[in-house]
Image 1 (tube, one colour):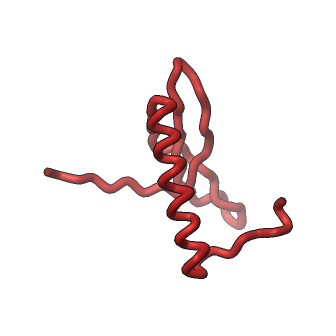
Image 2: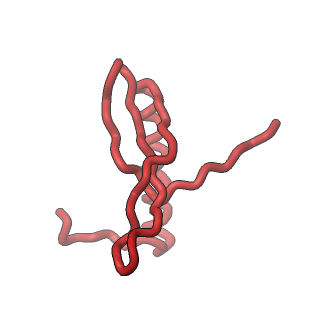
Length: 79
């Protein structure tokens, strides 16, 4: 089985349309001289709401493990 890797700097937008959740992933492209990098849409992932919830739960579990390991720190000021 051939697996492909896709790199993204982040998610530019998440929206719900046509009964599906759509993630638009972005990569940062160099800006003009002295300017900040510009996010450029690179790929879209579309999944049903149940798949989105499952992915969300998986990400929350990973966040909890990263917090526990000290890789991430909770931002108390954001609450």
